[in-house]
Figure 1 (tube, helix red, strand yellow):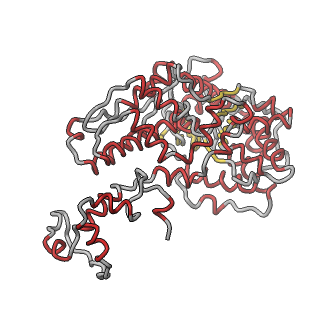
Figure 2 (cartoon, helix red, strand yellow):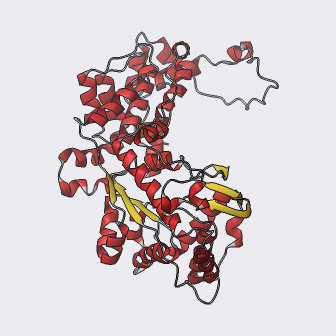
Figure 3 (tube, one colour):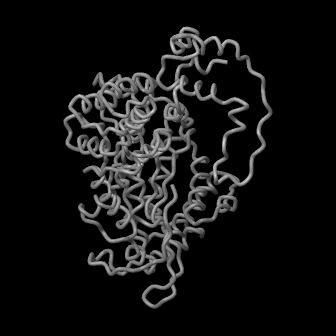
Length: 486
């Protein structure tokens, strides 16, 4: 994740601990809950009447606007407040105008690795929850409230040339290795600075050199908070690997003064329980748990109603109790599943010509298009703690989810009809679009066997004949493996 850049503009602080600290004075103002909710939210422009006049192929592109909706929840407000406090408290002990901070920075590159007078004010907290429940969406929305890098030039009439990185978000490597984490760290710092070659200048002979350089870089750029996502990947680390990485994170907090946020699925919690010292420290600022919504939750209804207002079908549908129940039954309160189901259902309603969302359409699309999610949904539906703990293991891999959401265009029957109408004569009579400047080279013609197709076209019931011959599958979106067989 890459954030914005800004030139420092300082605001006097009313809180004594924050006053006179340029790193804090350059941050955006502390928000009350009303302002935070407004800034975190993202609601695209409503569906315009002229958009409903577009043809189906155009409106299908509009549907993806649903993916950009950010509905603020109470948990978002809590997370925003906690992160705001974490960053500012971490900077209290690293005021660059104080002599102790300067001595501490010098000590990191000298023989005395850590200055005795330095007292860290950094803390940690953890964010856990099911995959697809909205952790990343919430964090991205909240982090976007801060410029990622702030360039300082002068402070209170004195030269003050520094670059401040307010936050850095990394994914824990899939193999849970410290070496992989170091590589990601220097890549992320380079992205924040706008220097794509930065990581190339930080190659190290061994892991100890790399970790020492990370400490220096984190201190030099006054990183406000280090957010580590996908921390459950540490389960895959080699023997002793997870303890080494967790202890290094806490070393950053205690000795370098960098606040750290741990983010992951529920299985991440067991990592901390193995090392009691880490467990106590990882929850120093608390633990925020993202849970799936219950059907009766007011926030779930807010989300469904707001998403439902974005309809690009010709006939707007009312959110009936039957539809509301169907949406919950086939998503089990997982926000990511809800968005995916609404996107796919609107696509089908437009493609099929029904041009209206119904409970039957939602069920039909879920059963045909989202089959890959059934094991995970079944685990949630069971409410069996042992099965629910396996939720993340039952989820498909990212590539499979991308394939599930892939747009396949018209149904096969309609596509065959289009192909039947493309003949040499028709091609010759087709006018080029006005915007076309030059005619591309056409591919060489390939002979096809037309006899069987001709027989089908002359049959009284062409559609039934195509189905019986296996030319048309019964699947809604051509997702049957039979369609993809060689």
